[in-house]
Image 1 (tube, rainbow, N blue to C red):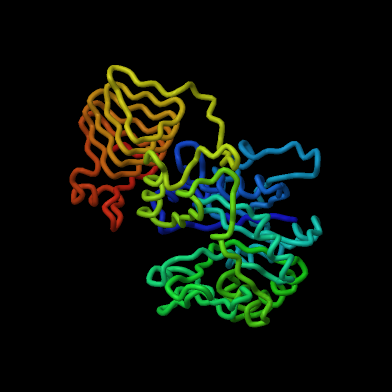
Image 2: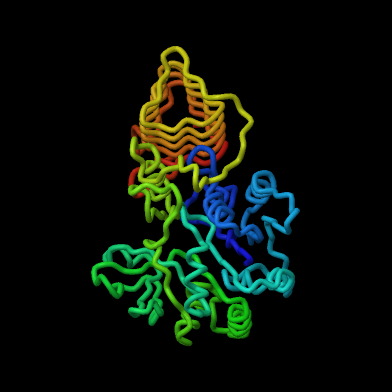
Amino acid sequence: MLGIVLAGGEGKRLYPLTKDRAKPAVPFGSSYRLIDFVLSNLVNAGYERICVLTQYKSHSLDRHISQTWWSSGFHGEFITPVPAQQRLGPRWYTGSADAIYQSMNLIFDEKPDYIVVFGADHVYRMDPAQMVEQHIATGAAVTVAGIRVPRKEAIAFGCIEADADRRITDFVEKPSDPPGTPDDPDVTFASMGNYVFSTEALVDMLRKDAADPDSDHDMGGDIIPAFVELEQAYVYDFDSNVVPGQTPDDQGYWRDVGTIDAFYEAHMDLVSANPVFNLYNERWPIRGETSHLPPAKFIRGGSANDSMVGAGCIVSGATVHNSVLSTDVVIDEGAVVQGSVLMPGVRIGANAVVRNAILDKNVCVPEGGQIGVDLESDRERFTVSSGGIVAVAKNETV
């Protein structure tokens, strides 16, 4: 097996969190970055030869992988970032399929029988080995992971139509009338952007696609439909995936956090007493960076309710509710933080108020400052999402 993680996306819809970093490098859930979820799933399944294809503002992503995901290589395992190498000429990747085509040397060096190609910016747990087992059993050229979503919501996804044997009969990007599943006409298989390929089939198709001047060189838009036309594509039902230690609440959980509102809502999924997505599953751990910081501290009556608080945080006489605090956050006396996501190094001054906001790394809110109280005023200075979430870019002083 060879794992290829596509991590070169610009993430424009997640701006300003992607102003200075690639989308997969965006911090998430206090102790993690988005890419940690796919890497954890692959490693937990025993797949430890993984290439992460990067391109857009990749420095922090490269550093995170090198520092957090290093391995001894004693058994030939590796997890390595691979920047755009321009092996085929002085040009960047023109699409996700072109990224793999330009990195074909990775495939030739490893000589895998099968290739797992996963996206890098979704929040979920999954055992990829179960998807690989189905792929081998069916003899498919490609297997596409599909998650069941209500038909009325499926118009935002690449949609899969399949027969009773799970063979994909049609694959359409964002259709106005999504198809139902074979066993339920009211739901649709939406593509999760996760694929398993038989190596020879993928290599042949990438070469054909590269020679097509009319192609956008995209995995979902070009490569998968080509295999569907050849009747060699199958869907894997994500609902059938069983992860050790999962709870009924988080079984089948998957979130595309491609917008500010989706990113915020995924954090809110973490902080309830019975979280929709449980980070505390020791049998299928999500691995993140080690901070080497002291434990969080609450002084002068400071409190945090229905919240997650990272290492190195100091809450001094302040109130935190329904929020996620990353590492090294300091909140001073009298401040109130409600329904917010504070990334590493944030400083909140005395008597400040922060509501329904995402503050990127090292944001400083001075004494008496307000965010999320007057949205009209906030729109003049910051990004405010359609759902009313205020996002403040990295290193800003409010």
